[in-house]
Image (tube, rainbow, N blue to C red):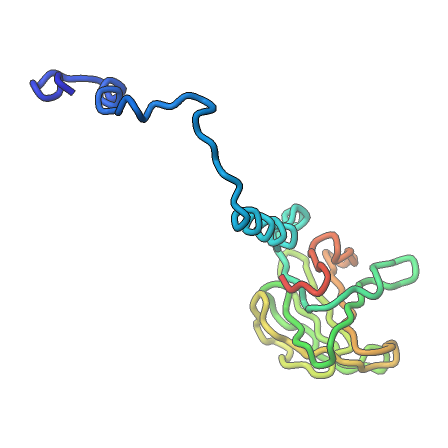
Length: 190
């Protein structure tokens, strides 16, 4: 500090050493950090949020990030061996169904087998399919955003056994397992 005051140049490290208080220089083991219950609770909450983050490792394998289409529990898993090309998510009737990503609605129709169905094209070869809806809130050609409500869950069509969403993701014409790319969790909306 003395050198700086009389106009001599000093290095940054010399300056820092000269202004450091002697009592602020502690050695390892001189500081004890107490265990705080609130800190532990906050860390557990953050770990839980990270567990169900929409940014899971699988998301980036496909070059796109998806959100969960519905709050609910999976009742039937993806099984192409029995021609079940998606998953079934059980929830409360009329629950909002969300678009898993930005896209364009390319199909809105009622069919005898699957009831009210909607298909959204997301670009780079991705389609998402939502079947057995009570009502569709979009029309063919509509642009939708990530997490936007596009339908309400229902119990329509012959291939339904109760209120649920049959949900599929297709990449370049091939059905892929939604659970590999979306963390659904127990009743957790992402």
